[in-house]
Image 1 (cartoon, rainbow, N blue to C red):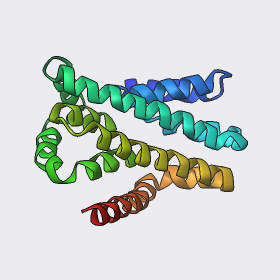
Image 2: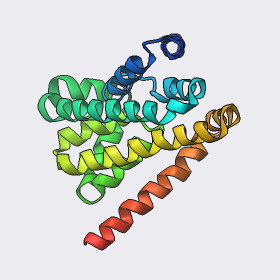
Image 3: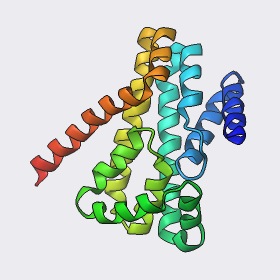
Image 4: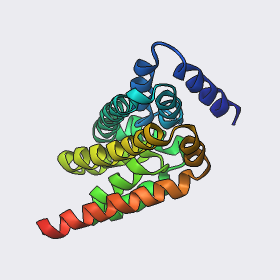
Length: 196
């Protein structure tokens, strides 16, 4: 637990540095495939410090996260046995991996959207998506919409309401992400119904 706390403190220190946007992109990238600290820990204080740049920061976070998700997908697709499986084991995702195999055939886009929008470890799903051979276009669209939706929603709330909403988001992260996921899932189900 001390290691996680040190990583969190390090991330918070980076939020105050002039190179914070670069760190945000890097952390968002590696969080989607191997890093345990979500980029929100850096995004929220950055948005609060410079509310006029909140949406730009959310864009950086989205691009970094989706690119990192593609890297995780590649780990799963190309190196699952050597690299992907040990990373999933490191985060205790073996059981989740097997459950995902069964669900992907029918609900792959929703699985990716769920992991991309909620605190569920996105890295487990990015690696699993590649290992299972999910259509990369569907993976990319689901990741972009859900990760972008999550980070833009956080930026919009900080931009509009400032510090009080940051405290609310941090205190009620589970409920906030659940509500956001319901909106994203409803959108995917609507599109699936229209297309199908």
